[in-house]
Structure formats: C-alpha cells, structure tokens
Length: 196
Image (cartoon, rainbow, N blue to C red; front, side, top):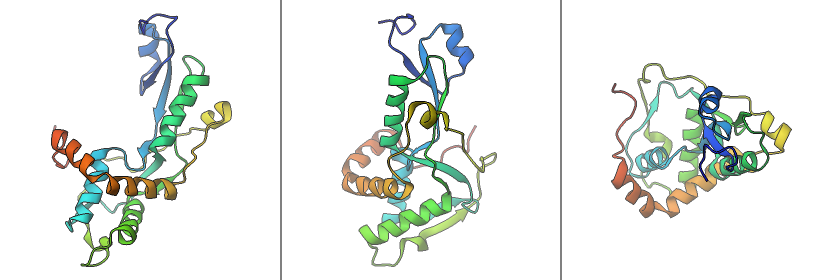
C-alpha cells in the first residue's frame, strides 16, 4: 500500500512535526523518544567499552554532569509496537525510560560492570576516565514527559536502568566480533559533532 494512502496501515514518524504529516496527508502516529539502549547505538556503546577494555583513556565531556533519560532498546521497540497497535492517528507519543542519570554515573556503572565481568589486571576501569572540554552547545539535560504512553496505552518500561545496562554490556561483550564488523564498515571511533 502507498504510505500516503489514507487506508494504509499507520506509519510511525519519529521526530516529525504534525505540520509535516498533515501537509503530506500521511496516515501516521508521531512519536518522540528519549535516549535509547541504555547506550544509544553500536558506535557509542563500543566507544565506551572498547576504550575501557583496551586500557585507553575514556573521554568524559565536561564534568560528566549532562543528564539523559535511559531506555533499554527492547523496551523502546515494545513502546513503538504499543503505539502502532493502539495509538490514536495524528496523536504524538513521547517514549522515555523514567531513568534519568548523569553521564558520569552511567560511565561509573559500566566501569563497575566491566570490573565484575572482565577485570583488568592493571586495575579498576574507572582509572581510565579522562575529562575533556564539552562540545559547544551541548545540552545539559534531555528529558520529556512520556506520561501519555502509560496513561493512555498502558505501556511502561520492563527493564530498570540497572538491569538494562547489565544486559547491554553483557550483549556487547558476547558479540564483540559482530560489533567490530559493523564498526569497520561505518564508523572509525572518531569524535563526532565538532566540525561544521
């Protein structure tokens, strides 16, 4: 079916404005999301884990006090599915994890997990934290009100931050070869967001 056809199944539009959808006549349920994973993508997760496992300094922007709301990736997928099944067309649904953490706390949690799951003979992984100048304009806090999703559709995260981050770290450790293959094809672990 043509996605612009009013009879088509609803589409999910991530970060799309209602005007864009209305102008196009798209049959959609817009959603906005909080940071997902607990580590948002292969490159960021691998950066943190690779730096720590390889014994390299791990750069922390500013003082590490930037706050993000963390959501395990499977919970994110379940939220999208919930919106597709029961969301009202044209209504916007925010997806969040109810797990706001400072970046430094996330790094400390990952360091502690690595100390447990893959100890470094040279010492605790936290010794590798290095504070670097934050990039200009970096938001101090990302957060949103996602109360409509549990209130209207009954969805809530099934993983806590602690259980989700553990599952994430374990997954990356167990699937290192796959992550390396993805990284070689598309990402060289360079610092992003500085050039214009």
